[in-house]
Length: 599
Image (cartoon, rainbow, N blue to C red; front, side, top):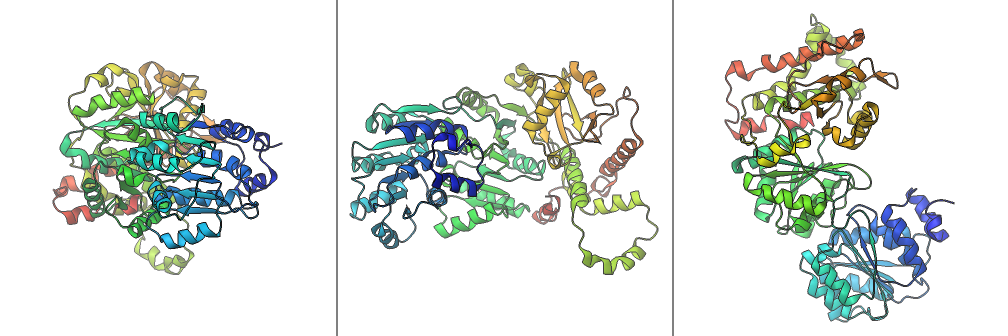
């Protein structure tokens, strides 16, 4: 018996689950599905976005619906058009083996006549946004007076968007004896009021701590001056070459402005806010899902309903006014069991908000520094080298190889590598070599007192380089687990784990230094040497020095190290320090950086 069979689902649903490739139910599914199938109850389920809530209410709803009756029996309310369409699509996939079951989406921005026609043909399940649903009820197009089940999905988001009165009006048109299932990431007062008014002794399920964040998300904050916020955003993007992110701003004006500046500076960015037409929103979201846009700059309202599982970073360009809103923002990453990072760019006056959020989500923020220009150059250099290594060879180039060999005749291997890398790297170096340190110079009290994750000085914290990264299958969670198990350290002994394409960085207290370097002397994983060295730079950039106590290094590792030093030599040879070029002298210079070559 599979785990889904054990939940009590019928064969039609199990066949659909097999087709979808689902193997193991999530925690919210394990807790919700059996009790919803067993009894006619009201349910309040608190779980973060991305934990499988649609299946948690979708499977039981489909199993309980009478597909032989054309009467509308189930109503699902969701906050946005995007989420409405997504739920409808998933419900149709779940019910593919249930003959005669129709699920119809009702939302604004589309033809109400066509939606009315679909309802008239028979829709046992209706998925709707509150505004359009209230409109159709008022016009007498839809009758929900006989429904058996009402589901409020992302209830806190609907109420944050101002749908409280609409939801009350809609629910007042439903029978009292129905079952109401409320799914929400947080439990603010308004959600509790809805539960009290329209639900009868609801059963409550909580996945994780109530109102807390998920443990797959690492929370970081970066302290900068108010005028450096945009420059800090660019550096965070450049320090994470594979970034696929949502950048949150408070207003539509800031959202559009930041997106336009990012595009002007050569980033694959787009804006998502309320002033866009529905067609413009669809174009932006389609480009984002296809990863043609790597940085989606959005307002909180416009971003609701974004459901993309592989977002790597959420960047809070500005903190929201409400803590619950931050919970929703950070919930856009770390979904479906994957890890994610939520970054916050703050000024000194906003630090008190960080502490308030920590108390609410029951997780600590890591105080981090904006990378320096040289640190970004090193990260980008290794990323470029890895991209060259993994690029598939186009056989069409073979026709030109004899002539190319003639052009490159006389260059030895190392010189050729230096020149190939420098073609793109020098542009990047010219831009960053003379940029200033964006970090606030005076350490704040919390940073001084925290130790551990907030300590950037040399008093007790050591930064290490390790030659494994994302292409080896690691993210910050799995690498931390690997190091913890290998070194027999506690979870809190390892911090500031930053994973890049083919290498990573991590910190420990200085007391663990000898143990770490000794453990990783001639250390192999699946026949490959895993090398750990001390990094001189607090953020993991610049030259790394060799520890004198390590012995027995293989020749191949020495060659790798010497090549690394030659590459690092490019930092001082490559250009603008001697040529005297002025960084940031014009927008044209910014455009010429050709960042796409480093993504």
